[in-house]
Image (tube, rainbow, N blue to C red):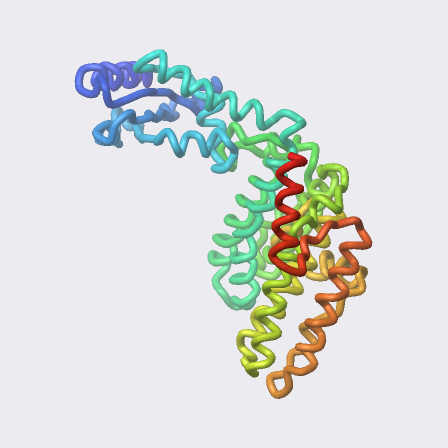
Length: 375
C-alpha cells in the first residue's frame, strides 16, 4: 500500500534540490492532518512560493491510483484565508508543516495563524459578523435565477443553484459563530449542527435542499434558510455596536450633504430631470443611512429592508424627496430640497452636532486660528 508521506518526502527533496530559494513553506491539511484518512485518501498539501519561479513547482499527478495536487498559495491569498475572507481558513490554521525555508518564513506563517486565532476572540466578533453579512450577498443571484426559472425547468438546475445557496449560507453561519469548518462540505454536518447560532429549521432546510424532488420545495427551503440566516445576522449586527455618540457620528455630514442638495437645486433650475432624479434618490438614502448610523452605531447593511433605515429619516421630520420627482415640473422638488436643507440643519443642531458655517473668509480664518491654538 502506498505511503502518502513517502510521496511528500520525495517532493520535499525535489524542492530542496531544485527550488531552494523559491519555496517558503510546504504543508498538508485535510484528513491526514485530522487523523481521519481512509485507504483512498490523497494527501492534501500545498506550498507557498517565495518567488515567481516557485509557482512552477506546482504539479498534479497519480501514483498507485491515488491522485495528488501539489498547489501553490501565495502569501496574499494565505492571509485572506487566515483572515476568514476566504472559506478555507482551516488550510492555514490547522495544517501540518512539512518544510520551511527559513526562520523568517516560519515567523511569517505563524503570524498568519495568529490572525485566525485573534479573530476568534470576543472583541473581534463584529468583524466576522460583517463578513457573515457580506457572504450572503451572492446568495440572492441564485435565488433570483431559481425564482425566474419556473417549475418546468430541469431539477438539475435547481439542485445546482441550491447547492450554491447552501454553501454560501453555511459559510455565513460559520462566520457568524466566529468559526470555520475543518472538514469539507458533505463531511461537516456534525460541525454545522453544533453551531450555537443557527436557524431553528436548519437541518430540515438542508434535507429539503439536498433530497428534495420538486423545484418549488427546493426554492422555498432556500428562501426560508436565507431569510432566517439574515435575521440572525442583523440581530448580531445590532447587538455588537458601540455606545451611541450622535454628535460625533454626524460631524461634517450636513456640510457634505449640502453640496449634493445644491447640485439638485441647480438641476431643478435648469430643468435637468435626469440629474435631479439621480441625486434626489441618492441623497435621501444617504441621509437616512447616516441617521440610522447615528442612532444605532452601525451602517445599514445592503440586505436590510428599505423601511428599516428610512424610518429614521421620517422620524427626524425630514421631507421625502422621491414622491416629489416629476419630469414635467421640478418646482416641487426644488422647494422640497430647500425645506430638507433647513430641517436637516435644525435637527442636527438640536442633537448637539456642530456645523461649520461661516459668513465670510475672515470668520473662517478666525475659526482656524482658534482651532490651532486649542489643539
